[in-house]
Structures are given as structure tokens and as C-alpha cells.
Amino acid sequence: MPPDGIDLTDLDLFVGGFPHDVFARLRKEAPVWWHEPTDHTPDGVGFWVVSRHADVLAAASDPATFSSERAPGHEGGGTLIQDLPHGLAAGVLLNMTDDPHHHRVRRLVTPAVSPRALAAMEGELRERAVAILEAVADPEHCDFLSEVALELPIQATLGLLGVPNSDRHRLVAWTAATLTYDDRELGQDTEATRRAAAEMAAYAAGLIEEKRHRPADDLLSAVVHARVETADGRTEPLDDLELSMFFSLLIAAGSETTRNAIALGLAALIDHPAQMEALRRDLSLVDRATEEILRWSSPTLYNRRTATADTTFGGQPLAAGDKVTLWWASADFDEEVFDRAQTFDVRRHPNPHLAFGHGTHFCLGAGLARLEIRVMLEELLARFEGFELAGEIERSRTNKHAGVARMPVRFRRRADG
Image 1 (cartoon, rainbow, N blue to C red):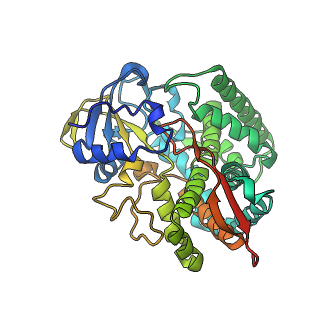
Image 2: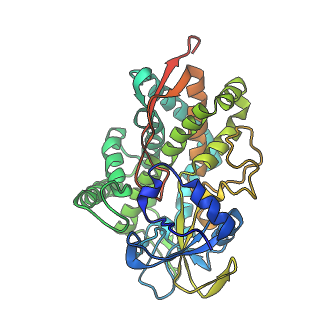
Image 3: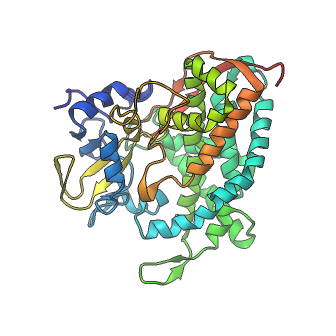
């Protein structure tokens, strides 16, 4: 049995970063563990915690048994610990749908992030990265999160969607209000979160209507005008709710996950100066360094699935409707898979991390995220040196993302940069 007192729904457990010590014990003592509900647990319902790499991989590879949407006959589901109503979130948000509908909508997006599209995009991303770094007013007093790490992912996402870059700050603010829990608990809304969600939805509705009447060469226009096959073989456009949810999902993905990887990646290099120097001396390591940053930061900590039928998994009996949480951040530090798992190593290879998930829900933006991290690393090291943290990294209060709220860094421009 695992040690008593573990409560993964107590968000204070995560304010100092991912609780690696807790998950190391779970991997060793109870890799598939039933988490009883506590005062912090939404819905008052327990859930399974899957912490080993092999088990997380197996569950993610079996969407028929482990649904991202819901169990048959259940009114709630989704990929958060708390149940979300089917037809309003679960079953509508792309990441909370199952195949075949998930695949049909997903393939609308894949051309925009194909290897060919990303290769064509790299020059523009590099120009953006250079402009972002040149705009840092005072490298001696830089909030690396807001001034650097956030900027490239959100600018790239808005460019793909055809959204004015000037609107990025309010879109990021609305997203942050709905994703962080600084003044609330899991499953709770506040006036601020409701207002942010409503303002985001109103913005999305206006933009979608504009794309309907004046389509452009962008991803949102393509999705607005696309037709998707239905269960009975007809084709129809996505409805307003699906389009609004699609927009919100991509904004969240573009403003939350990759920015945290970039920030925590630099923090890891600062904490491991020999690794920083190895990368600086040999930039051919940048691809491996990018993968290690993704493993080390694990930007999405968990995703939930729902058991669709009674089954046995990891030696435990699961009932239809049971909530099952897959902890990617734990799998990425599994000692049975990663040699010296607690060591940050820019030369690590192979590196079978699960930072982008696995299977049918493997992150659509994985290639773009990798490109953004690589480009920013290359441009940072080309222009600056002497990196050091200038204070504590401030974390967002959440168990869902490796949220960074603020990261004070000081560095200086290279004389030959």
C-alpha cells in the first residue's frame, strides 16, 4: 500500500513544482492506485492514479477501454479529474472526444503543422525569436516567462489561426484566468473565471463570424469552412460551440504548455552549467536537448481517461465509469525506462518521454513545439551568456500543467552576439 496522506487534488502539493518524491513512491509501491476522495476532490469521487511509464503507455494506447470523452451512459467525462458535462465540454473539445469524430476533426488541422509546413515556417519563427530577444529592455532584470518564453508560442499560434498579434495579451490573460487556481479549488468557478470564459467566447464568436464572411489563408478560416463526416455518413460544418471550443483549446495550447517548457528548460540549463556549456559548444546537440527539456519539464502533468467497461489493469479491478488519471510527468521520470532519470542530460538518447502524450491523442502541435524550443534555444545561446536566476521561480497553483507564473532571470549580451 502507498504511504498515507497523499492527496493529488490538494493543489498546494504542486506550488513548488511537480512532487517527484510522491510519485517515486507511487511507482515503487502502488503504480496503479485508487485515490480516495478528500475534501479537495471534485465531485466527491475517487480516481485511479497510473504512474509508471509502461502502464501510462498501455492505457494511452487503448482508447476503446480508456475514453477521453466518457463511459457509455454517463453524463459527464473529459480529461480533467472533475467531470465536465457531455455536449458542453466533453464530447465537444477536440481533446475530449473519441474516434472516429476526433480523427475527422483532427485531420483538418494536420496540414497546418505537417513537416513541410513547419519547414516553411522556421524562417518566420526565427525572425520572431530574434525580435523577441532584441526587445528585452533590461537583461539584468528580465521576467523570462512573460518577456521571452511566452511570446514565441503565442505569436506562432495566433499567426496560424489568423488572429491579430495585438490581441495576444488579453487572450493570454483570459486563458490564464481559466487555467490557474490561485484563488479557488478544483471544480470551482469564480466571478473572474466566468468573466474570462465569457469574454473569450465572445471574442471567438466575433472572429469566427468574420472568417465565415471574409475567409483568409489561415487555419481558423479552413476549419470554419470545412465539413466533417457524421456518424450517419453525412457531412456538415462544425457548429458554433465546436468552433469556439476549438479556438479556445488552441489558444490555451499556444500560450501555456510550450512557454513552460522553454522557461523550465532554461532553468534546467542554469541549474546544470556543464550541460549549458556542452550545448553552447556543440549546437548539434540541440535536438537532443529539446527532447530532454520536454522530458524534464513535462508541461502537461496528467490527463484523465474514463474506463468504458469493467476490466483489469495493472493487477487492479476497474469498473466501467471509473476515472483513470495518466501522469505523464511521473512516467517521464520512471527509473525503469530512463537511466539516471533524475539527471538532466542534453545528450540523452534514446529519450522515449511522453510529454506529448501517446496514441490517437498525441499532441497535434508536437512538431511546432519542438521547433519553437529549438529556435529559441539557438537564438538565446547565440546572443546571450551568463544566465542566472535572479529570484525564485513562481509557480501557478495547479496540478494539470507545469505552470510558471514568473521567472526572474539575469543575463548579458554576448560581445560577439
